[in-house]
Length: 247
Ligand SMILES: NC(=O)c1ccc[n+]([C@@H]2O[C@H](COP(=O)([O-])OP(=O)(O)OC[C@H]3O[C@@H](n4cnc5c(N)ncnc54)[C@H](OP(=O)(O)O)[C@@H]3O)[C@@H](O)[C@H]2O)c1
Image (tube, rainbow, N blue to C red; front, side):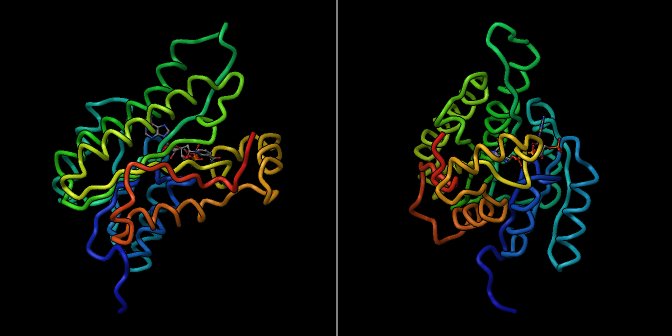
């Protein structure tokens, strides 16, 4: 068996029951990592991800948590302490996009969008920082919407910009332990949240000189690089993976 880039590492991927997170989990497992497949509501998808990883000779376990609820994040990490009992890589992939006119602001939308996109990654990273091995990796997720905040998407864009600030701060805080922290900034990507909106898919495809949207495999490839030892000097950065789309 050949040495793979992530042999011996343990990765937590949030939102790995579907969309981009599922493809990231499969990619990190292919590179040799044991994977904690986190899910919130996609239990069947998480089980399938675990099945696919183990069927290919890898190791994976699925744990549930609503990451906007700190107590659920803490409970998940307590399970992770028992199995797999180690943590090297955190991929803060979970996210929800929603929006609407300012005049129609709803408390539940504010709570959910800031909760999942901003507080969730914070709670996850806080628990991870207590346990993570030296030379670990934290990979946060922003969005091209943070670069070009559109009408009606202010809360989502603001939450993602907050994540970019977290990245810069945590990189400085955790660097003494060799831990790197970076942000991936995807553009429209399939499979993923953009699939629900064919008009947005087309608009985003036209916004890139490639005249297409990205694939989850292309995002997973960027994550795999940041997770590897090869990326030891890349930290505090924001990697645009959006086909140079400008909106
Ligand atoms: N796809 C795109 O076009 C695109 C573009 C820019 C940025 N992004 C970013 O890329 C990341 C992945 O997006 P995606 O396209 O794969 O989205 P998606 O297909 O809509 O999946 C969203 C993921 O977030 C998880 N999630 C939702 N609510 C949660 C909660 N309360 N607690 C924990 N997890 C929760 C879901 O888990 P369950 O299904 O288990 O509930 C699901 O795995 C997100 O951060 C997103 O903002 C995506």
